[in-house]
Image 1 (tube, helix red, strand yellow):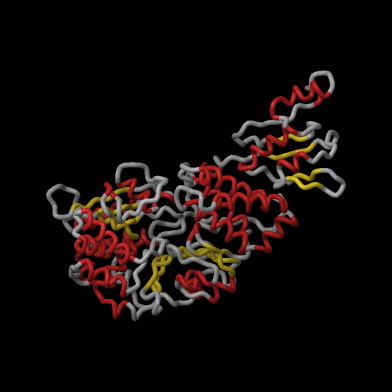
Image 2: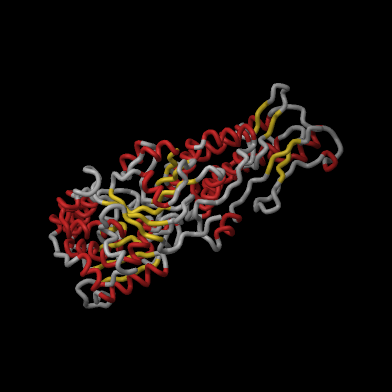
Length: 537
């Protein structure tokens, strides 16, 4: 299995570098080298900076893609209306295993990010700058960069700057999680939707954007909109930072102009010539098939038209030797373990979806597939943050992209390939998280007792079908956690006590079995009704 990605993988560039300029000279651009490579930067008024961002079509590079000029103007408007000074936050939190482009920038070009952040702070009249980071290496680099500029969190300074460390988790990088962590709370979404431009850090209007976004702003301010837009596509100008991993010879971060063919980027990293699929946008993203990946160019519009998602720039091909559903199950277990644990769709729904996908892979048949689709639908648009929605998107894309493999598992019990583990996941501690996801047990029928009443199929149609001979046929796979309550009701209500729920040894929930005939008190139906208790309906 692949090891986790290094903090700073190999960096390559297509065409002329912009963000990665100077990377061929030194490992890290300190302030003197940064100024030598990029030159000085002049301050701008708020409206001029917003106009620049609009002219270069700058959007957030953290995945959401919100226009930066609209965010900048919203913060300025809110601050003026309330008569307060806003806060500027650089979101350098990168807790998703296949993403490294922000980590690379924070480690190797921290001053370019600070240029953009300080430019925005000066334009807005902000007196507080906060940089949120995830890893040791990024914290060390950005603290050194602040010291090189003489910036600190000491009182009395015109601009107070500080670094905040967030956990390396999927949900920690969401804007609301970062703001909550800055305020001293847990790095989890608060469960309510608030616009940072209105009320962010300390209740103040807050300009929060991704680290690469601020670096792009600094480049645009130096070279001007006209020169900036000469690179890349007309409607999506400039370059994009991409992280290539998965089935590649060399994991790497690549700076490429928009419009470059995706197939060329994959070739640079040593991906298979005809991948089974390419996961785009990371673990909240979408799969492209080999034909679409061959036709796509690097742009949000192109990826979307072909079923993909550029997102935060993570691109992960897989080769023909691995089971794509098995690869997806590894990610699904990780997504379930990454739950903030604050709402049912995330805390219960994602483990149920991961269990459902496991059922499908292990021969659960059509019933398990229908049960999986039902739980995915139940998760969507009901969470306290974007994690359940993004995870549901990954599940749906997996089922849509690998229909042949899905049919092989549903109809024939498998595709005949092992899961080689090419999609990167965290190392130490990951398996413990995955093993903590509960299993719902397995239903079994004692055919010497069953008389074909069919009540189990009425209660649990997701896992039972009535066969032509009038008897129920149960799914072979484990019961998904979201159906365990219904499974227990079916056990209790079986008129012939023929159904039982067998629990796996490692599972956490209590085993519930129907009593055997030997355990029943003597007598007729009245005694049996008493033995079944109040669960009988």
